[in-house]
Image (cartoon, rainbow, N blue to C red; front, side, top):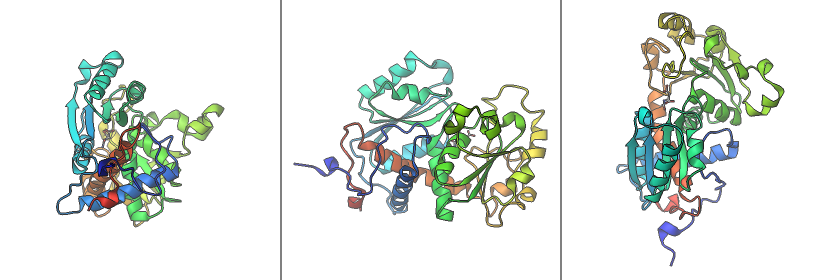
Length: 342
Ligand code: NCD
């Protein structure tokens, strides 16, 4: 007899084939749409008086965080719990874990205990990829060094789409430490796939060189999304539909990239005066954590254009969608269809 829990998902449009979520560079527009569409249904679950459905009962999600986190970790924990999964959260100090055997051993150990999905954050770029190649569990990259943060990008896309409907032709300007921002990198892939126009802005020392088309070696053309690079913030913000401020990732910076915080704020802080150049209905976003008075002015962060808290709420729905989609992968029993989750 087939139990509800073993029944395959019946969402007829399901095209999902990812066993892991490591970055958005291998996501098509349709795949992103599938996540965002499912996230919309997860939002409905979150809006219920009792936000609990048994879709992932019997599934185990492990949060394995080698780096600090507030929202991403809490968001995944909540997402798993709302869907009825068993959720375990582990922290490891960065000093006790190095890339290599110990990471692989940890992941294998968690799988041996029945982890279906391991959500991983690590200070080394590539750590999630390494883990993914050594386990049957699905790995979700919750941030690997300065490289990628695909679930943040998906929640950003979801939040923008909720306001605009279609992102084609929308100008999204990311301001700040682009070089060290995994959020910027994943957002660039996702936004490009969705047809948005991407502008990145920051001091020349915090802008990755390979992004400018003229700087690219010929073989890199297909490996990088097309973005406009702009060091002048006033020019960058012109006509922006979305402005995303990014934190200075001082934990990843070498010394000498900025003369001083004061100077950085004077030239690159997202302020109300500067936002006057953006589209009158622009949205103001920030992945958090913010440093008000540095990359963003306090009044702007809480002002009428700010949708920063919406990003956080939507993050839970997007992560629910991802956990749900991953649950049926790798020969694991597919979760019960969402239609049955009243
Ligand atoms: C970001 C991160 O960890 O990369 N935060 C987040 O996940 N919301 C951005 C940051 O740390 O500045």
